[in-house]
Length: 212
Image (cartoon, rainbow, N blue to C red):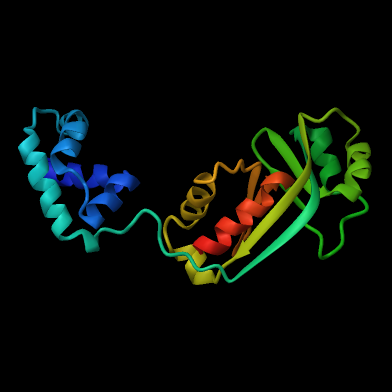
C-alpha cells in the first residue's frame, strides 16, 4: 500500500514550481499541504491530516538533493538557423503517399527539408523557393499551410540527448516562458528543430543561447 510520503513525493516531483521552491527552502509547507490534501487523499483512498503531509514535505526537503529536478542541465553543442521556410500538411491518402517519394527537385544538401508521416497526416517543411513546385506536385488542396517560417536546430552529444530524461521538456519550457508559439518540433538522432514564425526567431534564439 502506498505511503503518505510516497504520494507526496510523487506529486511534488510533477510540480516544477513547488519542487524548486522546496529545494530553495521558500515553500510554505502548511499552505502547500492544504493545497494538495485532496489529491493525496484520492491517491491513498483515505483521509489524511495536513500535519502528516507537512511532515512528509519536511523529510523530502531534507533529502531534496536526491530528487532530480524536472529541468535537467542541458548542454547545446551547436545551434543553427534556417529561414524562409514553408510548411504544408495533407491528409494521408494513398495518392499523397505515392507522391511523397517523388518530390522533385529536392532541396540542396544544406537546406532544411523534412517530411513527417503521422497516422492521418503528412507534413512537408521545405525552403519557400520550392513551395510552388511542391504544391503543384501534390496537386490537391492542403489541409494546412504556413509561410515565413524559421527552423532553429540545436545539436547534442549522443549520450546527453538520448540518456538524459526531460531534455526536450527543458527546452520547450524555456521557450514557453517567453510565450513563443512552436509551429512544429522535428527531431533526429542528436538534433531537435523548433519551427517558429519569423517574428519569434530572435527571442527564441536568445532563450536557447542564454539558458543553455
